[in-house]
Picture 1 (cartoon, helix red, strand yellow):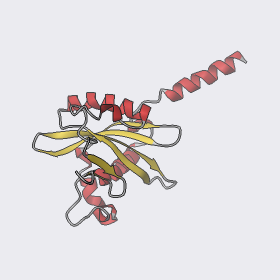
Picture 2 (picture 1 turned 30 degrees about the horizontal axis):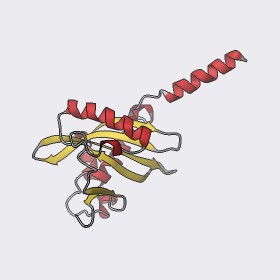
Picture 3 (picture 1 turned 45 degrees about the vertical axis):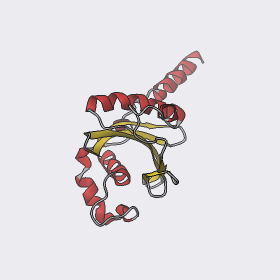
Picture 4 (picture 1 turned 60 degrees about the horizontal axis):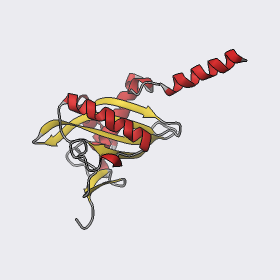
Length: 179
């Protein structure tokens, strides 16, 4: 009986310590496909696409062609099936070329993203800065489901802030009404 209990505890510890990387959850082709889907939500839309049509299959080639510009650093799946991610992406800023973004999503029965949400964007920075900042914000996001404790720290967070919010209909950061 004691061996069974010890083995059960070992399995529990092993399952809780699953690496927080995309490789721990998906094969390479699945990672690329899923990252392409994520890019569709958060990257610059191709010419001719709007916030709704960017998901049309006709634009997928554009997102696939930009896949190499993204580095998927972290992935964690909680017991409810919610995935938490952190990646480094191109920045559209004169202040630098890279920024970090963290968020959540779920997968439907066909493996398609549902309930996508960006939780935070870092300021632009070096890859080293973004990796360190990402570790801290990602851990907090997993534990609390948000990064509200960092809202006043503009050295770590660009969004959200006092005047922006993430619109889960358009899947983009918008200025709060009345500001």
